[in-house]
Image 1: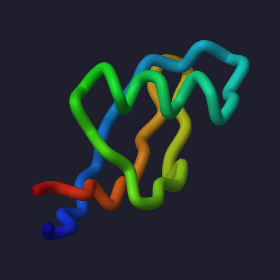
Image 2: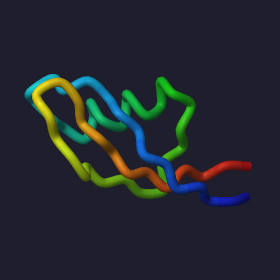
Image 3: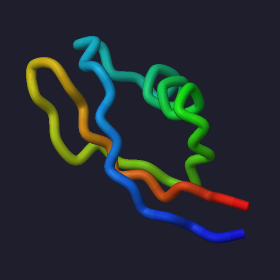
Image 4: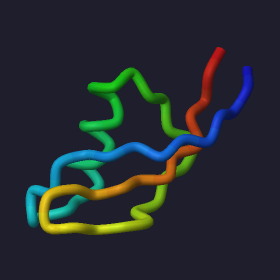
Length: 54
């Protein structure tokens, strides 16, 4: 396995939650080892993700 760092943009639903963010990551076939919100705009969240790949 290897870890790849990525920046992912997901739509801003104005109600951030762990479930919402992790659900959006899973939809993009990302297996997050860790993630953090690094930027918020009116329309998007930018998430820094450590993606665990096989």
